[in-house]
Amino acid sequence: EKGGDCMDRDQYVNEWFAQEDDVLQSITVGLKKREMPQISVPPSVGKALYMLVKICGAHNVLEIGGLGGYSSIWMARALPSDGHLISLEINPDHAAFAVENVEKAGLSNKVRYQVGDARKSLESLESQRKQFDFFFIDADKESYPYYLEKAIRMSTPGALIVMDNMFLQDRIFDSSNQDSDVEGIRRTNNLLSQDEHLDATLLTVGDGLAVARVK
Ligand code: SAM
Image (tube, rainbow, N blue to C red; front, side, top):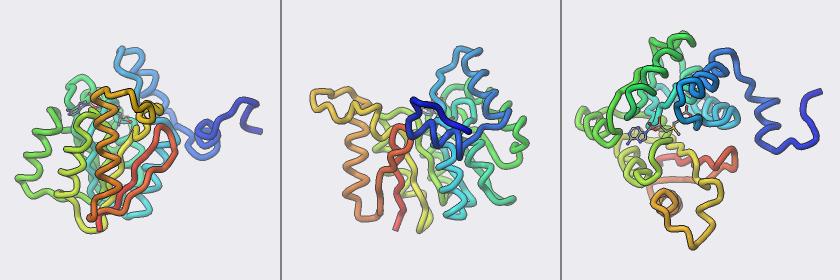
């Protein structure tokens, strides 16, 4: 029987619905060994991303914030054989480790990392008139409002825009906290809830996952 006495909701989901294989487990170990930030999404969010990509039948995913490739791999595994994922990552060491992991997972034909500041990469993709039917935004929180606005402009009708850390470990509820990341998330939640081009909500999985559908 799985589960122990002090199991929280996310742990329960992780154990029952989001088991990691060797490749995914090795990313967590590898990030630690390389002294890179250990801030991949938890398995529960990885599986939620996988489900959302499958359910909406996405073919072209754009990720902002790739780190070691953990979330890229969950999403790429849900893509059809002709599906593609581009991940924007500012740190070349992170991107190199992600490429290694994507190769290990046998997904190199589907996943590509674009190294550089996501703001620049987005401008370049937009000028090439690229469009995507699924976005996963998981980079610097201050830029979330900008990333959201760009995603809307580069989306196909019915596209999903998914964003992580929408509760920022509950820091957004402390009204005396005006840190720039907290303000970035508050502003994004405001935009998500008000934008007439979107249907949106927050799922309380992990640290809060925004799911918005472009009308
Ligand atoms: N989505 C990843 C996962 O679950 O496996 C985790 C991403 S981690 C939370 C955030 C990543 O965004 C880091 O690797 C960081 O280097 C990258 N990042 C931060 N600011 C960025 C920017 N302006 N442009 C592109 N990437 C950025």
